[in-house]
Image 1 (tube, helix red, strand yellow):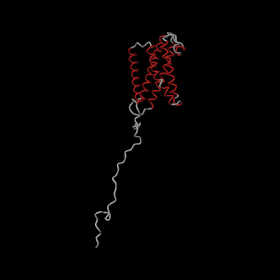
Image 2: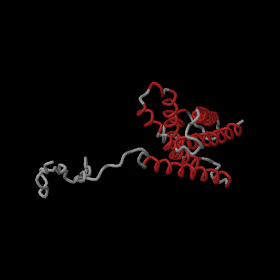
Image 3: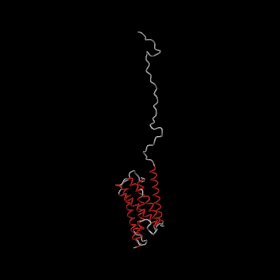
Length: 218
């Protein structure tokens, strides 16, 4: 039974990290509009939320299994308070802080309609440090960190997250496509002068002509 809970804790932690990484990657694909078409179907957002919620569930499986396991003897304080554990306290603390950030992101996502948009976006950005902290936790506390398959999958996922994050930052730094270019200084309101038209003279008359002779009588 001891080995069962330990294996469950390991599997739950790996699956939770994979779901969190998939949620972050899916969100970046949506925000960078990497999918074809300009519209973002509602099902893509539903998948993004589903992955994040499922990650919370498997984090719960990971934590509960560690508490029930008798090999390391973790209690509620050790799994909820950073640096309270006697077994790799710093490595475990990364995971505890990541747990709280993940809960903050998911709870604010559920209450998105009741929160100001700016507040929700500020909290939602915590998904990136959450992914970073859980990745450090997996690399320092996980007993599978020496597995070559796990290493390749982890670093490949990290590279994909970094690539899409840089692409998103570059998109945010670009000016809007329809923004008007500012006019150079000193020419605001400038308009070309109309070309002067040639002066108009009245048509010559017989009396005004200098070469007209006297009227001829008939």
